[in-house]
Length: 139
Length: 163
Image 1 (cartoon, rainbow over the protein chains, first blue to last red):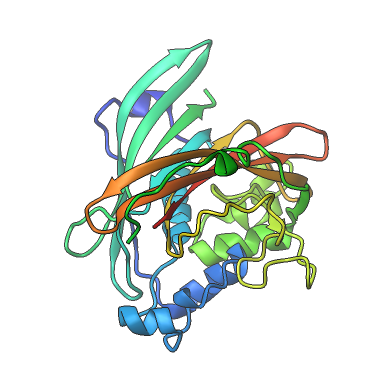
Image 2 (spheres, chains in turn brown, purple):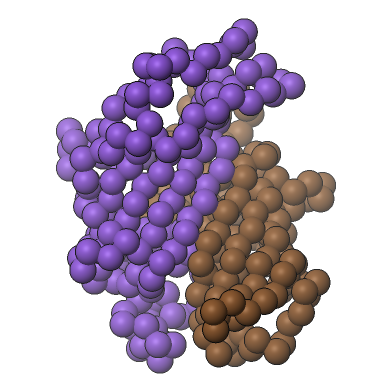
């Protein structure tokens, strides 16, 4: 169901999204997104060896935050801005929990707007990729 | 670890200097490839009938996807797929880089069938103290995406942290 303006308030949580990307998923992301840095698919790459593993693309997590917001909107609105910071590395085959909270809900020049704060938490509960979005609803 | 970083006049001269334009294509196949790479299950990003039922012209770009830069051997970066020439280079001498963050602003929908013209520039330079790496040079680059009708549909800013 497309997101209804009356169905959420400031403080409401977005439905969480859980992801556990493995190497195959990262290869698909590399093909779709165009980032073929071997640090994200090749365990023999010197930087991967130094870290002990390949790591997930920061941009994969950014795109996954986009998916979280897209799922919440369900085409009942559009994203005006989406931002995140890469504060920590995430490894393949580890569960990540993506979520968000509505920080502000307001109307401006006839537009219905909401600002959300976003997170990507690793298994230890650390937010490796804090972010935010502003969305404008259709109705 | 850099002892002390200075934003010289030579570095400042690069601010705002735009790169040559480069073409990004948005096709049904490229939208599906990106959506599949992220792991979407929403049919709107895969099925044109579902996209039209949701009010789009064709498959819409999933958030953060701003088309696929056309790839031309010799002119494209073989690892990151974008153009090699992204404007004047910054001669700061710092060897290490981290990706700090990404911000995208949207001004209109982008759907399969659109062709975007992209220009980039260095938009800001600043210095930040880090406990682990000492001083870092924060380079903010900004790309502007203009569709085939001449409308700016998105801007994306990225932060490179050099140390």
